[in-house]
Length: 556
Length: 67
Image 1: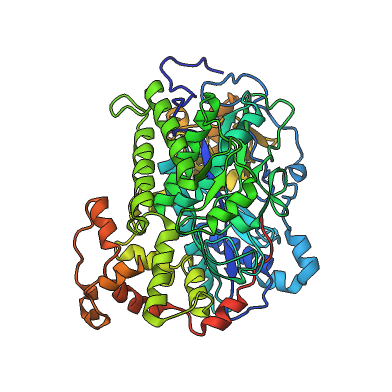
Image 2: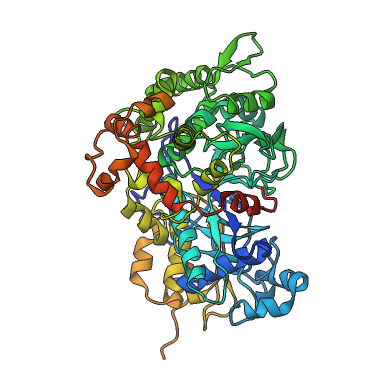
């Protein structure tokens, strides 16, 4: 291994602000109006298959699904990984992912349907792909899910999350173009309004040294209240939506616990899923399940940006010292109150609104940003100042004239549309047409999706432009290990037999055993560290030989 | 908010202007005020893209559980 050259970028991000390794996961609602009884898992597999056909990128059928930040030992290679030659047999490395696999689908729904539906040359249905932008696209139970690549800041989180919506759109178009398949619609929402919810999750990297109790205390009041800036809005109240009205959050009514491991039953405000390895002493992945899927870029940006700021507060020991009495009830009371005047009781006896609590967090984050210098307009980190400014202005609008925030805050944007219909046509809250507006708000097709209709009329502010999002569909972020993963898939796809968050596995003719390249450090494997290597080598063999320090190929 | 929308001078009859270029959406403040304009226009457009038979469409949207 070569020694680490001087002057390489550090593997640390500025501390105290909005920069942090983060990523999003979106489970899309899936529906085929012309085949309402169609099996959701089969339809989801068709979606993945459609993208595979579009991109011809190799599906990583055996990919691990754990988001694993384990770093077992110091990395010796300057470019960011510890090398190991896997002795594993290929059959072990293509071990089944923990989603319904093709065999199970065949057993449950008939092999004939499976075979007729298109499968790859090995005869197995694709359920799990790693994309050239570093993301993962797969079947999660009964929904297609896009998990974004790791990014370092909220602006990129918006770009690569929105890229997932374009991926979803591409699959819908591809299926619609097939005369033998019923068209499939995808919706970026979180409930069918019939008691079922599906998630939009966020992941944030944190030092493992921060006590989990601090995270719970610091985050709970924030999570109970952040919906006022990033709720996506929902028609109906209660898990089945049967109580007429409109509420701020898609997800609030589906939460029943304060802290817990579950994500599908008794959902907790703070999810403790960590999936630690024995040596995961350096990082933890904070898995956030309470957010709504956002189409509004400003809401999405603030969701990631303010949460990252609050995690910095917790790490610095400067989170507001408040505790909400009965936070689950508070979460729902706030969601059900679009006037933003509902109060929750703090354990110190005060009664405060959601906006009061958000202001407390804002003030603390602004102070920390100043102390650490990351919010400085010249010498800062380039992100924290903008997040703080948008947070402050959004809270200001919500406190003075909420309607004026309808171009940025998603629930207000949706509510403005619903109010428009109610006023024009005299509709009651339980009118089916309003239910359709709520649902169709999140259709990923721009000609059908009502969010996109608003966007096309300049009624929604944006954070990133269309060209940036289009680029994010095919290009990985440059500044995380997602760069290495994505470039391996797009440059050497036919020689990549598997990839996960923390490894890429090659099968290169002439090199013998499978080569597993671990990528356990999220801030290594960047373009700065590996870009030259990708540019230099046209073949996976030459690339791997230099990467792994193998003997050069014998002369032909 | 509803009251403000009602105050907008545009009526649903001026849809011929829908395709005319709108004012440049420069400052966020300006965008915010744009957002309260032309609601009727917007609803007319959305009438045309909403799926037919709202009740049946919404009822048929049944999902299996997720995370």
